[in-house]
Image (cartoon, rainbow, N blue to C red):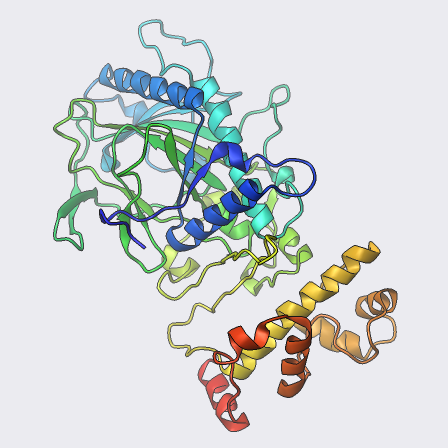
Length: 477
């Protein structure tokens, strides 16, 4: 929902509230995580607030960036003209320019970018090591918060992230990019598109349209508004138009989309450049991208371990280096008009219980028939009850997929059978997937084990006649 001024009501969280502590999560942590996840679900972006001292450091670095780019020549040399070469994704360092995007960039990459400048006449932007550490810590905190939302174990992505601190001779995969868009004294290609907004205002963007970061998490702090992100309904919103001095924008990237089996959508973004030429400096920004290590793989094993369904396209681990060099057409990744992302409502007892709802990317598919929705709801509740029992008895579960579970019901020696015996599960009752329960049995199960289910779901999940349900199922196949 957009605010009264036409800007989206992005979720705003204090960075200090996202710092986890031992024991049970605090109310402020649960509220902040819930706000962050809801904002990611609706807008694929959120706003984080830094402490005053950190915000002052960010402003100082942006001031230094403006002076740095202003001293650059109007026509960069040929060796400094770079386009987006995916093969060099983890090797960029120092200054380069992309005239097609009318953008200049200085990449700071620890382990590769020299701390002391080699040319005394050309000083790099100041404070980059401190800014790298500050934004890197923020990005990791946000990643851990999303892990909590998805009910994953603590720090599940540690194996694919850089060491903290880096070991000897290691080069950082993550990068801090100091960017300058549309500096008037820089002669870029300046090919742009004019787009009419919903309010009739003309906006100017570069010809290449939207972009998607291949990061896990990106954090952006700019000196001027101009970052637009596409929301879940396909509408473009200015997301940094009302930021305070201590605030920055954060959004997920393609690597997190892959590692979470598509549960977390990456942000599609573009930069507005029509209100910049009147300013002599252009638009400067600090962009930190938390990246996975090149020699690791993006795997959905953590999602499977947490009991989430993993579709076929995410089943096979993908080497990070291959993933970064591969093109990812956004229209094939997801359909923003029909894909419903995750939501994490807060239960009455204050606990955070993830509720994953996903629809197949098929615009011709009608809504799920009530019988199928009922089955999925029963599966979810049954999984939660099984997990509760296992936690109390200290039993580690391995959830089966639907096909495995069907076979395990009839097998004498299987993971399902062994765990059912340990837990004391009733003989003949499906363990994780109640796929063979008749509709009346599913309703009875939900009414018995999910308090309040009838009051909230009876109208939405009322049963249809068997023939009608079969016909609706056929329409979705």
